[in-house]
Image 1 (cartoon, protein in one colour):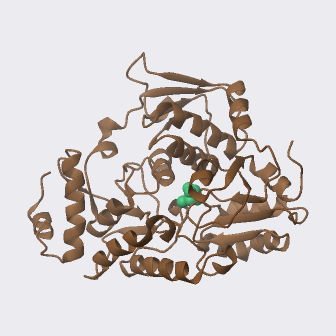
Image 2 (cartoon, helix red, strand yellow; image 1 turned 135 degrees about the horizontal axis):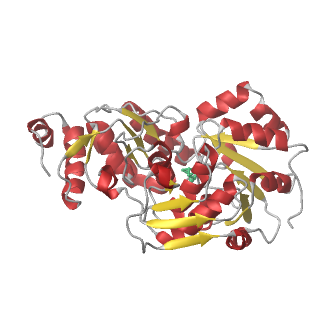
Image 3 (tube, protein in one colour; image 1 turned 60 degrees about the vertical axis):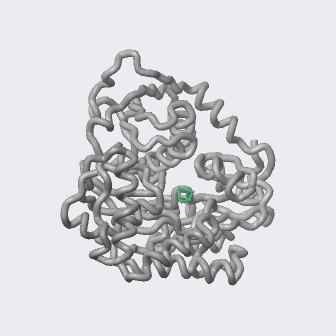
Length: 396
Ligand code: F3S
């Protein structure tokens, strides 16, 4: 990969150890993917925050970086950590874990990375314009940024996004090149998608079928932020899809007439719902994968017409800034008065969850990861049904 004189100097250590390390990482990736050069990026989002998933290795790597006191070159934000930074005891987290987790967050803060601890940084100011090059490392946010805003990012790892945040650049390959962003498979959605969970189910099926391809979704009249969040998260979990398009106006026709095609009709959607439906009463309902928006906290507070059943917990996950806004509107107070809990800074997958038998969620991504990452059986239903069941409603 070509390096300018300035970039060469950084690689030789002329700008300090952290920048040398970051440049070394970017060069290794660039060389591996045959990138021609580094390009300027507008912002970064860094995953790899939870002590549960990163462990001591994460601390050791971050210690190497912070030794020379680097600062990020661009706007950068942080993914969820392994605990609520205020109410961690209530989540069953022990002192030793909390100390390690706080240490990790402090190291990121010291580099100037915004400690939003959220996977929806695009609802917290880390947004992009069509065509902006960025470096994001949370898979659901990658798909969201590429597909909703038309930003250009690859699926970065936590380390490569951190390196990009420090240098302000990324190797130019993959989805940073316009010629690699053309749709190559067609999905006709004939089913009626009613809520974000339906979008998640469809996304899950697309990811399972098409791996890392770029789908063009047809017969979808429009898609809003919540629907995009859920479909992006699911297709990036069952597959590794990083970009999709809605209707031809956004990307033009498919070049190959014989491209693979998938039709999702009502029968297919009903089968998907069936696969994720609960078969027994859950002992916890979890909402917030991706993190809950203010608008969804409002909906939950309205759906909670009676208290949460004493046989089921209701845990909702969001970012601290979003919780603050929802508190100022009284949504959080209403949810907690009814027996629910709103946790911040973490998520059901990256925190060490206490033992539960069955978690019900409205998120297909969370339902996918909970059995392996948190050793909790999972099922999925629409938000409305999740809250109904949390209030003691019987499963159908
Ligand atoms: Fe976000 Fe955690 Fe889901 S990071 S997308 S809430 S697995």
